[in-house]
Image (cartoon, rainbow, N blue to C red; front, side):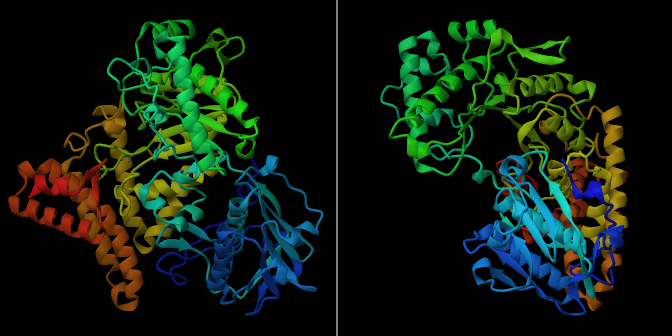
Length: 632
């Protein structure tokens, strides 16, 4: 992948004298002199000759991108570059062309969807003009945000925080010819707070989960029962004995298997008709550890070496039916390059493949394969996410990912996890794992990356989860980014004048995590369900020290209350959102040996802040009221 940051060094400088809501500052690209088109400026001494041009039929994505491009250049320079449609452009002029405009069509610039995919882009200077071109509208949008990064050091951290350099009198025209394609073609928002805002999704270069899959009778995932439940032919052989999962062999009954396939085909056909523009659909197991152990399923497992083989064969047969339908007169209007995605999850996680040392690859057992159009979504839910997938403790999961990667040959979806689902309010420190986990996934040619965090918390997250959103979004685009540099950028941009205090606390957390991993059994199988409210992991003096650091940070911010109340409020709220986690841990771990008055004050402060920021969950699918029922 070509990335502008691999071509030139971008120097990030945060200036508190040039700030907005504590979040603006920056510098121009290093080596600027060699990149400038001599005598040409996008903005010069309060004026611009340029227009931002979008296609006459531009969709909402390009309209947002053009508006943001104009807005942030204006914030940096005081000069607004007007946005016009290509149908309004007449005569000569200087332009920033965004998307597939008629201006682009008149150039010799070449690009293709095969090269860029749906989200990759090019930024090219030709003559006096700039061309921002994506494989689709989203790619063009991401080109606009990258151009802002180049021109004014724009970066985005959270819904209320971005950085850019202000007070610029000039922005030169740079001689640019760059191509940037993400390591994962599909990068999915994995945090409910981000998913509530299209603005956040766009600026983090992610998309909502809802855009990726056809919904089947109300479900995009764990929807296998939806395919068969309304069939008049539904039969007990279609289920395991407990009726908690499908039996993908229909207990070896050929007639029932045929009826089950037909029922699933009808459901899928109807879903395709209802969603003619989407290209992926899941047929995914129910969310439990159960499976069918009938003689037919056991025989296939024995033949191919893994229970997942039963799903692969079933999906291949269903895929064939749909492809045949695409060739009929009824199906032709709905034909597309459809991806049918199943889960390799829980009992179905292991790949039916064996390692071949001679070729250093995993070879499908007895030549089982996923036909063209059938994709696997691997979800290694029991992995130790405190440690990277290449750590010896995760060898089983590393091998299995490599096996599915070799079997899928680019047809791999990947579902990682990076929160503790039994405890949203405690820090789940897997910052040392992201980069390696993502690198290995890209090495396996994963097409789709979903790193699930607190999907059902829609307003406020704590325990450094906002930082995860930023770091993971950057790494999902480019797995070669240095996570430590990203963490540095976040703290400077998000916490501004109290970045040293907040970073001190975060660094202590990471040291404590290392100690706990080494000496306190913080790790092992299924760490996303590890009980974290234990004094074993959180020494009292450390929590007390963190509470003191919060107080120091608030005191340091106090002078801003008079000089810039809005700035003071923005920074204070970011500090307080992180404080929620420490207050919670202290109450949960040390109520038994701390004065009742102090514990009651911490409970009251927590509730006051949680109400202020509308915290809704304290663990997955459990309302915060459940915590208060326990506390009060």
